[in-house]
Length: 180
Image 1 (cartoon, rainbow, N blue to C red):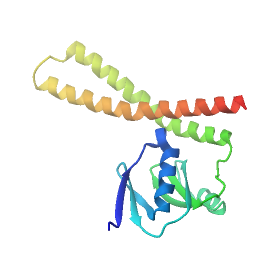
Image 2: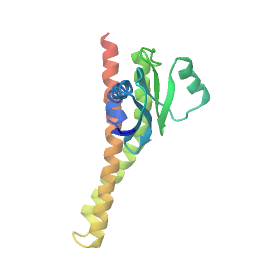
Image 3: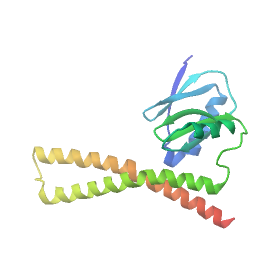
């Protein structure tokens, strides 16, 4: 039987709650979260556990921040840059139990993608304009420029999509708050 397992992340901007539910299911089956590698969660086989998982976003992981979670029954499992995953016994009250604090959390995370989204979009647009105006249609310069544009497209997608995903999720949450 395998003792390690890797499962692809859903993307925190798009599926953080889905990922947390998946982590919970796996913990019940004895697959314990043990870190990450690129876009994959890493698990080790262990004793089945009844755990809830929660994701939080914060630039710096300091002692006061961790203590707040620990006192509330949440254990820090892992961090991916400024994304932190916590676990607690099933039924533990979440730190962000109300929708206002959840909306604020989404706002902070969305803001972290705003600058990269603007920069990569502007670079991509500028590169496309330069391509049309100055780059010859054949030759090594065209090939090189095509590679630059391709890399900029990838960077733009990975910054613009999360930015708008957080913005849309926050807008929906705010709308839900107003409806109540």
